[in-house]
Length: 476
Image (tube, rainbow, N blue to C red):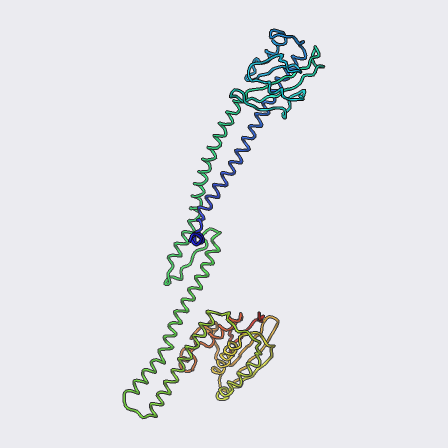
């Protein structure tokens, strides 16, 4: 149960994601900035303290170099060493012999810990400086050795020097606190600004959403204006408009299709009702009843063909890739259809002619047979007596083309693409003169598209030509 709820958990909003990302980034940047500043101050104070220690050490060493060593706190050496501390706040220093005996002990921290080394340098270096705590106060200090060759009496000394750094540490602590509060305040401000910026940035999306919600099936002509949205959403608006155009076209075709179905079915149903009412209006002979039933049967067969064609179109369009591929000889299939339509063509005094040749191709045999049959029967149906229907085959590396050409009335250019719409006829007065339901060419187009091909019509110099192009399909 828990796993299912976790899988269906809604993702966090874009506003929340951006706000959190901005907040985390701002905080990390300020933390890094704070570390750099604090580290720089610590290095500055350490360098400053080391410089001060070196200055005091120089004064002490100078005194040891110039004044002979004397015992006692009132000696000249002791007085001169004590004078060095005047004006130096927080500085403490002591002088010891090489054996560790105190020569001069200054006021302040216990510096004896600085003597716990085996070897001392003759000057204070950064690596010699140490920090420690004594009686609750922090010190930074170091020790150096004054060799016997540098003193009047030839006595070596150890000088230990330290200074109180509590003032620096307190300043750093206060500064760190200020920086942390500044980081917190800036992060909060950044979060608020980021949230407001995201909400403001989403205004065009919300407007687009409102416009989309306002679209109804009765207002499919509404389009989004790509110039009113940010450039990042311009492609989305254009794609939505394209989709809306296809939906509008589909709705229009569906509405026309429904009207056409009602119109096409109304006529045969009306005929059936009228003939049945006439038959029942008075007693008739069996021969008359048989003629009425034959007439009704013709209407039923026409309705059955129409329903079968509509079902075939629905199946092909809903699952266009459900093809049963096999190797097909287009030329042989057309020759078989010529034999099938031979009686109909002879009755109409029409000649069927095949030109060109093509190698076998991969395709759905039943579908291709139906498409070619529709094209040939359509050509025979609308050709004048004594004319010739020409079927031409051509083939290249990419596709195989079948063209069916017959003489016929000129069709305006605007109507040529509509020939493949369901129930469309260029001459409405012909609707009841033929046995077809106006679905044959729509079926041809559906079959061509199922094979990844195309079909088009041209009308020039009182001749009509349909070209069915099929790409070469590799059977898998």
